[in-house]
Image (spheres, rainbow, N blue to C red):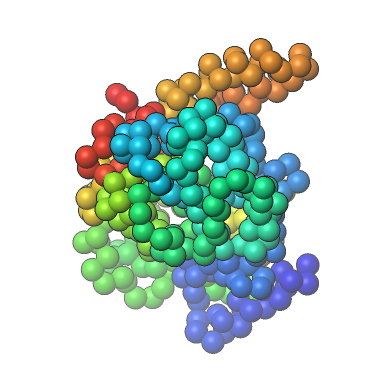
Length: 366
């Protein structure tokens, strides 16, 4: 609690010096403060953490992505050396499962050099425990820009939702940035910057420009998508992004907090809760197309995983699993592919990026 209080005090100090801060700045401090940020001090994954990701639910997820990577490698012409890059590798679970699946294609496995992009020292230490005995080159980086150039396959599962999100509110005189300040009760509270954002409306998708007063629009200024697209377009490779979000740009407030597997007030406990916002897949695709990528999808996660063969993989696992484990395989399959409040199949989307000369990526066939 003391660390969280110190982070809260630091944010209060910054607001006292410069006034209310944009939502993205608040989110950035809460998640990435170099000493007190959530990802610096927490391992958020699994049943003992604040949320559970697809790789932690079942090995099937990472295995299918490993086979996806092998298929993309073939589409690239099977280069002798390929960088397998993961953004935000969590505990390293997905990469370990991907590489195990890659063993079925020895030439692909031998070509791989693993590059992991991670900023959290807590998670980096966990990843080194998970992946420390690999018999291939494994290098960690703080940003994608630090990874050496070359042909690459890039994967990012639940990475973009944790990138700080900006918010603007539609008012009679235009769009105003949404900020975090301190209310009369001394608590953090949302407010609206007094001056409208100049030229902001010109940058909006047409369907957003007609939004009603009071509507909230979210966007990310981070350059990760641009760097990912640049590497794919120039290096002749492919990329896969899986996250929760919406296929087309729209208005709506999706800024949220998760703590102990439950939704929480995103302003209440800086440094103690995971903060996220939905991913705008239309915006991701537009960025990639602007620098020459071919964009595949988005499609919902259920469709993507079924096209990769998750149902057959579940059947095969149950054949070799002890009887008491078969039900767990079925439960994991349902969690990954079902809709509704408890399933991830519809809320989560997948989008693929590739160099223009590469055909349709696996899982995105019409």
